Length: 147
Ligand SMILES: [Zn+2]
Image (cartoon, rainbow, N blue to C red):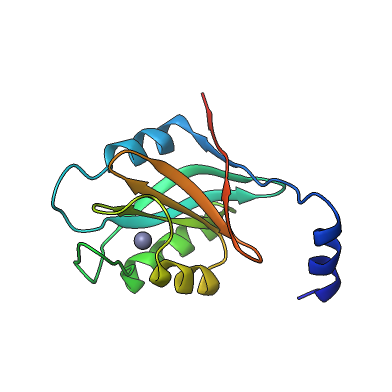
């Protein structure tokens, strides 16, 4: 880690990183919006990361917690997605999951996960879809759908 980069950023306006997604990814995320009492659903976003995150593929992965209030990606299924991305010369750029009962904002457990996997985190609640990155703090970033 470059310590200077963090110090410099405070002086300037930080560059807004957007999450740009293709319509198929957007449609999928809309289709997983929780409708009632159900377990959290989760998965990975595949694409590229440059000045923005770009997602053009999305995968659902089994939630090994099978819980209405937390999730954990099945490790074997996740590995397959990482291998797939590598074969396609893409990257796993983020994690998505649903919040059947809460608003679309990272929980304390999500924050711990963001520290382990510092990509973009998309959270889908009953009525919202939001994207977050962890910098000094949890920052929401703009979602742009590319039609
Ligand atoms: Zn969560």
